[in-house]
Length: 113
Ligand code: DGP
Image 1 (cartoon, rainbow, N blue to C red):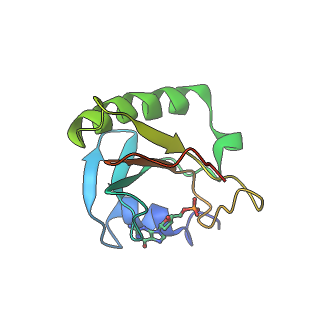
Image 2 (spheres, rainbow, N blue to C red):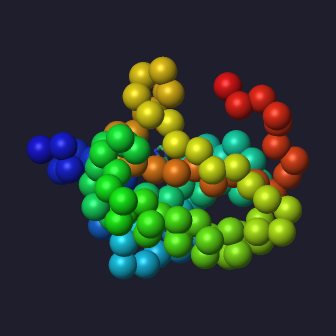
């Protein structure tokens, strides 16, 4: 079972500890273990899905709402931030539960690969 072995499902369930930043009925956000910027938060849907290709419109809307809340909580709504999701092998996705990286708190590079 894909979900039973899923690291982020375990984090959402509280079976593995995380530094929670935000939570609502549909989403959970926590600090990346290996931060690439002063602000580096991972936002995940509570419902297990492998990647963005499996994301339904309703879940996408919940994620968007959570991004708005998170940007305020992390004080990056004024100066801006980067939001990205890695998908599959070429995208270097390493955890196969959809997650959005929210990066900010400094001037980020123009380079995206
Ligand atoms: P990606 O490469 O896009 O699949 O991103 C996976 C991210 O998840 C990566 O930046 C490191 C982070 N990560 C992996 N394991 C853990 C963990 O156990 N806890 C936390 N907080 N982050 C993790």
